[in-house]
Every structure is written in structure tokens, then in C-alpha cells.
Length: 205
Length: 205
DNA sequence: GCAAAATATTGCGTGCACGCAATTTTGCGT
DNA sequence: ACGCAAAATTGCGTGCACGCAATATTTTGC
Image (cartoon, rainbow over all chains, first blue to last red; front, side):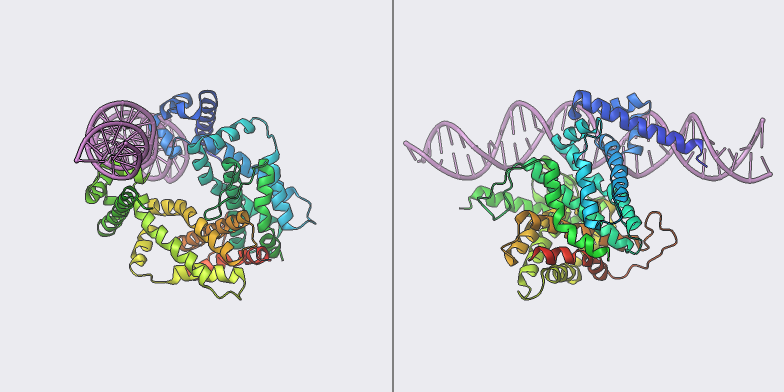
């Protein structure tokens, strides 16, 4: 039974997320004060921090939750015959390849603003849970902690790909003279995830 | 050529780290104001934030840097014959098993305080660089981005192990009734890293 | 229905992070 | 030794995160 209490909480949470995202998109992420987000959602500024622990978190939360559900569905939706590594990698790459409606603009803004990027990297942890769940759904015999580890590794690899994409040219420490022109983000994601395929396939046995 | 300028900067940085760690250990991490750390290091509070972007960062930085160097050395120091997965996993497990002087107390404090834990997780990224360097040192033929991805995956797995250790009992979402008594941290780290061994070994070929 | 327990919201005070501009310190050429 | 340019330090103002206690609201037991 979903009481009125929980529904109201969810409603204000979504109102805050929506207001934060809208204001950030139309004014730029640096020109939005929490006071304004709270006012747009009809709550006090203090209440905002009962739901989100930073100014950026509300902006990022909506996108992250959306992507988590989408990714988990994509993993479970792959044909059962293919290998786990292929299924996971294809799902993640597809999630970065999809236009996915308006989400495109939001992702660009997040990638552009350093503060939003940092916050997004933190909240990528949220995706690990659903992803691990999808993995065990495909292979019930797998150990839950193994699934969590693999999900975390996938998230970390995606972060590296994002760094590569933003950096443009990669100059690894003590590896001078290496300049790699950054391609499209989905390609970078696939390249970054490929080294993890053996671990994913091995865990599925 | 190391000018006086850079040496002085490094000196104040280390002074801030040392002061922060000492004060946190003797008073508890919550009872230290940045004003006191700055005063102990002989700089203004504003200057503190020119070196560290949060109150906890100075406390964690010393430990993290120490561990980064130690871990990289441990990886390169393993005998050349054994597999990459074994070398990396043993090195990481050993780094968590070593008493390592006074570092023990600092690690316990970091694990206990939620704020310090979060900051530590953020700075684990620092270790990825040296670890990736050590990996390419062992296997020069490996792709630098692959090395970075593997290092990031190792860091993520270590984070999962730390979560398991702190949680005590693991109750994965939608997996009710599962209670796993948490063993020693090194054992948990080894368990968490083991699923990544195939990826490490495959990359070395 | 109603009182009481449980929970959410709000205001307030404190400490923190950081942009900006002024000031001091350092490095280098002459 | 001197002076100038580059860079580090500092003070200040603003917005933010959060503990705490008071208040308002929903749920529960009767």
C-alpha cells in the first residue's frame, strides 16, 4: 500500500528534479540558486537539502535514474544466446548512442560543466545496483558480489571513456608524445569496455 | 630544476596534510575546523582552499598518496613470471594487509567516518594513474587506455569490498534473506578482485 | 472521529567552498 | 644590486550544506 505520505514525497522529489533540470537548461547550470529551485517546486530551501545533498544533484538525478532503468532493461532485453560481455557492452554503448529524446541536451550540459560532471560521476554508482540485478537476472548462478563488482567495473570503464572524450587528446603520465584524436563517445565507450569482456564472460560460466 | 617556489608549495602542502591528519586523529575528524588546520600550518584559511577543495581532502591526501606509491611499487616488484591478474591482486591485497606503521589508525578513522569515506573513495582515482603505469611497466605491449580501464576497475572492486566490510551483512536489492558475515578486509578485497583476473590476464596477451 | 505517535517541513545558526581583486612574495634579466 | 613581471597569499563577500530544535502534517490505535 502506497500511503499518501510516500506519494507526496515522490511528487516533491520529481518536482525538484524537473524544476532544477529546466532552470539549468534555460539559464545555464551556474546561474541557478537552490532558493530558486525550491521556490519553483513550492518548498523551502531547507527542504531541498532534505532531498538532495548538493545543488547539482537534483539536476543529475533525473537523468541518472532514467538511464539506470533504461540500461537495466537493455541488458535483460538482449537475446539469451549471446555472451554476457557482448550483451552488457552493447547495452551500454546503445545507451550512449540513443538520442533518447531531450536527454541529449541534458547530457551535453552535464558533460560541459565540471561541477555537473563530478556529480554525475558520483551518481553513476546508482546505476550499479540495477545493472548488477540485470546481470544476475540473465545468469542466476552468478554470485551477487561478483555481479556488483562487474557492474562497478563497467561504470568505472564508462567514466574513463568520458574522460577520454572530454580530454580530446590523451597524454598518459610518463607516456609522452602520444596523441589520440577522440572519436565519437559511443566508440570510445566500446573501446573502454572491451577489456572487461573476458571478466564478464568468465563470470557467466 | 626544482625552484624554491615549487619546493615551498610542496612544503606547505605537506604541512597542511600532516597538521590535518594529526588534529583529526587526536580530536576526531568532526572536531577539526579548517581554520585550525590552516593556523597549524601557518597559512590563512583561504590558502587552505587553494591546496585542498574540502575539509576532508587534506586528511585523506597523505594516506592516499602513500598508498599509491606503495601499491605501484608492489605491482612492479612482483616476480615477472606470474600472471598479471595474480600480481595485481596480490599487491592490492598486501597493501590492505600491511600494518604499514601508523597508517593503520588513519585507515580505521577514514573507514569509520562517513565524510572521510566519501572523500577517500573520490581520491582513489589518484591511485589509478600510478597503477596503470605499473601495469604497462610489466607489459609494455599493453594499450595505455586498456591499462587505465583495468586500473579503474580494480579501484572500483576495492570500493565494493570496502562497502561489504562496512556493511557487515550484505542484503543485495531484491535478494532477501541473505546474510553474509563479513570477514577480514584483505579477504574481502581478494574475493572482490578475483572476478577481474580474467580481464587482467587477457590484456597481458 | 479523535487523541497520540510518527514523520515531514521549516527557520536559524555555523562552518565551508570559492570567485574576485588587492597585496605580498619569488624569479629573472640587466 | 635593482626592478619588473609572474605567481602565490590573503581578505572579503556570497551562496551552500547541514545539525538542531520548533512546528505542521499524516498515520495509527482506539
